[in-house]
Every structure is written in C-alpha cells, then in structure tokens.
Image 1 (tube, helix red, strand yellow):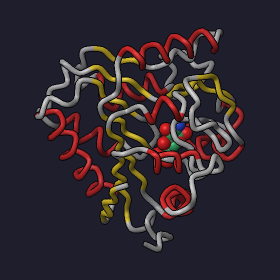
Image 2 (tube, rainbow, N blue to C red):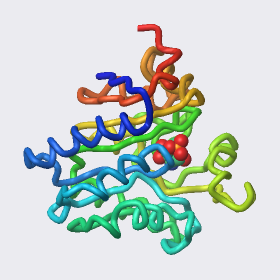
Image 3 (cartoon, rainbow, N blue to C red):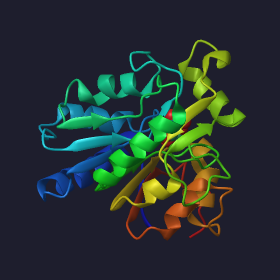
Image 4 (cartoon, protein in one colour):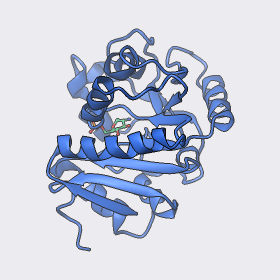
Length: 236
Ligand code: GLP
C-alpha cells in the first residue's frame, strides 16, 4: 500500500487529480470507478474545472441508497450528476438504480456491468467504521454486488445530508469487496481525525472483516491519500 500524506483535502485532491490525469493521458482510464460521500467532492471540483476529456471513458459508481429515485436530492445518482456528470460528459455513466424494488435483480444486473467493464481505476472513501462502498463490518472479502443493510453508525454519519435521521434509507445496493478488489488500481482518500481509527485498522492491523477496508492489503496496487489527522494513529 502506497501512502501519500497531505496537509489538507485540497492538497489530497490535487495529488489524486495528477494520478488520474496521468492514467487518462496514458490511455489507461477506459473504466473509472467512482465514489460518493463528502471526501471526493474537492477532487470532483478539480475534474469539473479541468480540461480532461472523459467522453471515451465509462464510469461505474460503488453504490446507491435503496428506495430513492435517481432524481432524489440525496441519491447518489443525483450527487454524481451535480458534482461531475453535468459538467463532464462520459461515454456512459453506471450507478445502481435504487428505485428498483427488486434488489436482487438490480444487484445481479450491476455485477454483470462490472464484469463487462473491468475497472481500471477505482476511487474510494472510507467510513468511520472502515466500510468501503456500503460494505459494512462483517462483509465477506469475496462479496459481490448485493443489497446490504446499513449499520446504525453509518445511518447516523449520513444523517447530516438528510432532514432527519429517520429519512436515511436503511438499505443500499453496493458493489461487494470482491468486486472492488478486481479493479486494476485503487485510490483511497480520507481526511480528518474521525477517520484515524479506520485508517489505522486498514493499514496496520491484520486484515479482518471487522474492518472491510483492510481487504485492500491483499490488492497489489493501492494508493491512499490521507491528511495528517487521518494518518495520526499510524505508527509506521
Ligand atoms: C458513505 C459512502 C462511502 C463513503 C463513506 C464516507 O456512506 N457509501 O462510499 O466513502 O460513507 O463518507 P464521507 O466521505 O462523507 O466521510
């Protein structure tokens, strides 16, 4: 695992931007795996304002809340349109459809899309409990796309985006850890002290399903871009 420790979110976004630009210019970014959450927002702002051309690139997002229409303001479909896709056209954008009442059917369809479009570069954030995508603690390292239950800590962490905690969906469709590990290259971003435990567990503890992100230790090409606060519990 390669570590890049930066001063703040903007410096992290700039470091990530340079890696993405380089991959794109080398012709290595045909399928771009994207993440939501507040962490990649600065990166998406840099991409929006840049002259990078994604019109030959397919994007595949990690996850979507179940039960939200793609037009719902807190859906990840809406987030991606606002933060990136409206300004930067891609060849095709894939996100799970949270409005499909049949989660099993939606998950199988989405997993097939990932198989047909192997991800070149996957962007990740991390939950305070070490989740990646919506793979909560306990998720198997070979899990594939499926309907998942969100744990209380995630519902509470994400309540800040909704009018009240009760409005946060309790389930989601998420790429599995196994699906994520198939990406050729992975870039994980984390900022702030509230991510320090998750980063420590991901990087220094023996991989365990207690920290889903620790599965990344088994991947050959992971770069983590973290600020000093998120890195504060690392000992090595
Ligand atoms: C969300 C998303 C993850 C994201 C994480 C952290 O629940 N499903 O993809 O990485 O939680 O979010 P944030 O970046 O807002 O801290």
